[in-house]
Length: 258
Image (cartoon, rainbow, N blue to C red; front, side, top):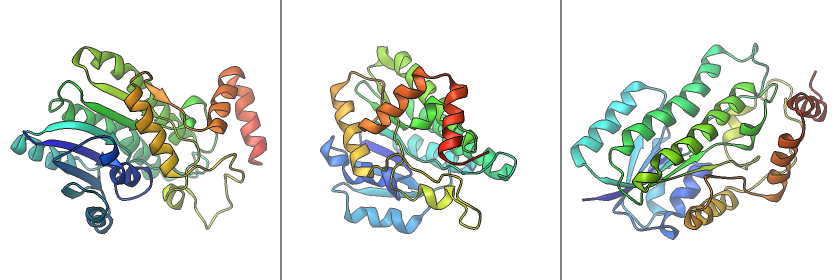
């Protein structure tokens, strides 16, 4: 039976870094790399010491899951690890964000993650691992980033609960909650034609830092979620202590938002 890793959002940022460093965590017969950008997926073949199967798919389209289901059914691999990194956000008021984008965030950040996880679980054995990328945004309501934050709160809650459910099967689930990270995320999140919504970034981490912390946490097998970085941890501690009404007011003041 073929042992494989499946990584979504593998063409850039955190997903690409997971793919690039996969050999530090385990040995795989093949890596299924999923993203929309076919050219960047092909380029991964030069960075990964395992055979790479590039799957250029839009995970907001139902047909993409038909493709994945068919491949799994035909080959019946053992999925050693699933890493859900696909996602996007938009920085703007809810009413000024197109409905297509608001629903698209829910579809990709939540629905696609749930769908792929459910499909893959049938092909996971004891020792299997799932990493879901949530966010520091999961811990608080965030005006002007409201749908993205809510979608990541879903990912965090879902991941932690699923971790408990899968314990009897010996399958590990880890939610990773990064703070601001230097990725292509901002290319889509920020509308350069409008004034910047986010004007101050408390911290900005490298994808390599986030991924290294995730691999370390996965090996320790203790936590069901992590918040990488001191400033990120302080942010989460603050939003846990303060009333959310105060947290939202501080955020709006910090970013000079009405």
